Length: 358
Figure 1: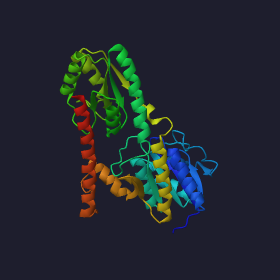
Figure 2: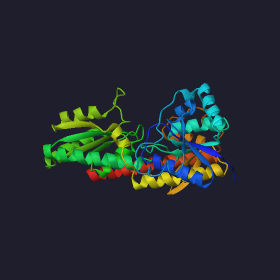
Figure 3: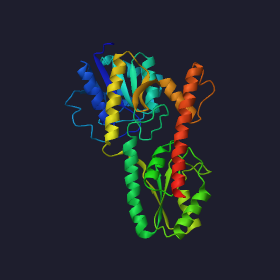
Figure 4: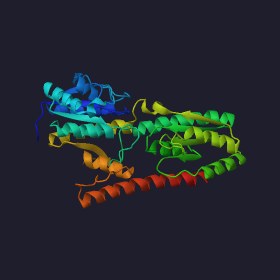
C-alpha cells in the first residue's frame, strides 16, 4: 500500500449536484487512513493561486445534501499553459500535497493527466450533469439534473393545459442528449430532439396536428441544447416558430439552462458520489494514478484517463488521425463495444419515445 501524508481535493468545470457528497467521502476515507486533506478552492485556478483550506471531519459534516460545490469551481485557461502547470505543481510541493482527487468532466481529466505526468498522482471522479463521459454509464449529478428538468417540464404542462398551448423546452447536455431524452420520456413529450438521433420534424408536426384534432390541449417538445439548425444556431427557438406556423397551436419557448445544475442532490447522486469518492482514495493507496472512477453495470471501476477520453472522442466522432496509436487491438475493440452499446441504448430509448407518441 502506497503511503501518503496529505492529499488535495478540487472540483473543476461545471458544478454538479453530488460533488459535495464526493468531497465528504474522499475526506472521511482519507482521514480514516491517517491522511491529511486540503480542499483546493476554485479548481485548477486555486491550485495555481495557492488558495487552499484544511478539511477535517467537521468541515465536511452535513455537506452531502448541498448542491453546487463547497470548494467552488472554475474553468482555468492558465492551467493549460506550461507556466500554469508548473505553478500548480510547485504549490503542491510547497503544501506537501502528495496526490490529488479531481472531480469533474473531460476537461478536469485532461488536467489530472497533466498533473500525473508531472509527478503528482491524480485520480478523477466523474461529475457532470450531462452524463457525457462515454466510458462510464453514469456521472455524478445526472439523476438530479434529470429530475429537475422533469419537474420543470411538468410545471410547464400545467399552464399549457390551461391555455391549450405547446411549449418547446430546451435543456442542457452539450453534445449528449440524455437529459432531454429521459426527462422528455418521463414527461410525456410529444417530440424530443437530441444530437444522437436525426429529428423528423415533419413527422413531429403531423403528430401534433393529429393530437390537436383529437382534442389534446397541452403539448410538450423537449430539445437538447446540442441540436442546431442549418446555420449552426440552437434549434429550439426555430422549432417553436415552425410548430406555431404549421400547426396553428400557440407555442412558447423555455430555456431551462443552468437551473438543472442546482438543487439538493438525489439519493442516487449522493450514494454514487460517496462510492466513487471512497474508491478514488483506494486507488491512490493502491499506487494508481492518471485514471478516472466510473460506473459500469452497477459496479464502481476505473479506467486509464487516456483510454476514457479516447473512447469519448470515438463515440462523438471527434477522433483525430493517430489517436488510436499505442492502443492494442483488444483495447480498440473494447472502445468500439462501449460506443456501440451506448448508441444502441440511446436508440432503444428513442424508439420507445416514438412508440408512445403514435
